[in-house]
Amino acid sequence: MTPILKEQIKKFKQQCREHELRLTPQRLEIFTALAMSEDHPSAEQLYQRLCKKMPTLSLDTIYRTLATFVQHGLVNRVDTVESQARFEVVQAQHHHLICEKCKKISDFQWPSIECIELPEGLSRWGKIGRKNVVIYGICKDCMNS
Amino acid sequence: MTPILKEQIKKFKQQCREHELRLTPQRLEIFTALAMSEDHPSAEQLYQRLCKKMPTLSLDTIYRTLATFVQHGLVNRVDTVESQARFEVVQAQHHHLICEKCKKISDFQWPSIECIELPEGLSRWGKIGRKNVVIYGICKDCMNS
DNA sequence: GTAGCTGCAAACGATTTGCACCCCT
DNA sequence: AGGGGTGCAAATCGTTTGCAGCTAC
Image 1: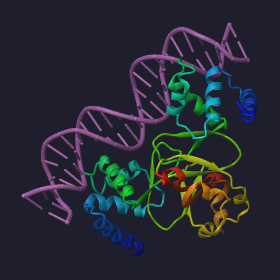
Image 2: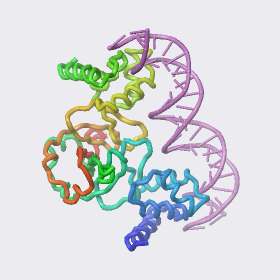
Image 3: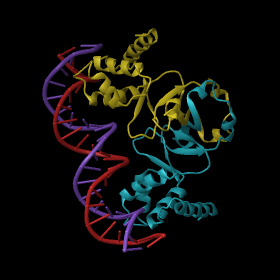
Image 4: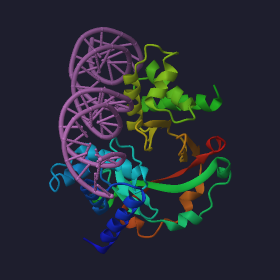
């Protein structure tokens, strides 16, 4: 358990209190598993990772819990063209690299994009919120195989 | 029928020949409807738009046809967090504005992003392909209501 | 104590598939 | 003529929901 993870869990517990969400063992396990994952897992994948440690946990609870977390802004649902939804713990603003072959999603930071001038006329569209860049490509692993 | 649309259809027919896809009335209608749409419709929406003009057309055919088009690179499946997939005819590289309230997807061009330097270290990930920016916000219509 | 959670099972919506017939090439 | 394409209906997959019992607060 890294210090970063500890910090995330501490913050999670606090956020639960703030949002009046009960801190159940299931929620804690689901959040922890998601925070430890680097691969933006689907609900199904989280279920498979957790059922050893918590055999009574049901897939429905994962779906419900993730939906609750997303609603309260603790977790992001990641946009992909896949049929299964993928999730990540909300962290600092970041962007995604998606390998078109193995579909693996990796994160990267790109703070300077916030300073880049958007095309003019965009402000006519409405209120601009967060920018999210997705770069598609082929990851190193897939290039070597 | 605008000249642009005519041109798109001409190109579409040629692409069908190149990819050895049979040019059926259904495929032509589905492609045309999608090319005329500005709103990145779902399969269901296309179905509703087409069943007046072509009452025998089935929803399955739309799904199958769209999948075929995506496979052959004539159509893009657009990333969203919605349960329904959305589609667009492949055009010049462009990016998306998504209204967080009404979920409407609009296009915008941003050619200069290609010239912007990516964060260093990204090339270590693998081969970089296309960049896709999604900006979330609130569109003018939703701000006024 | 009680409202919010959970687990179960059944329902649901989007998409896919097997099959027989059709029609583009 | 023949194989790809279509329409129909049934199956599948991811996800959601109703309900009864449980538990964190």
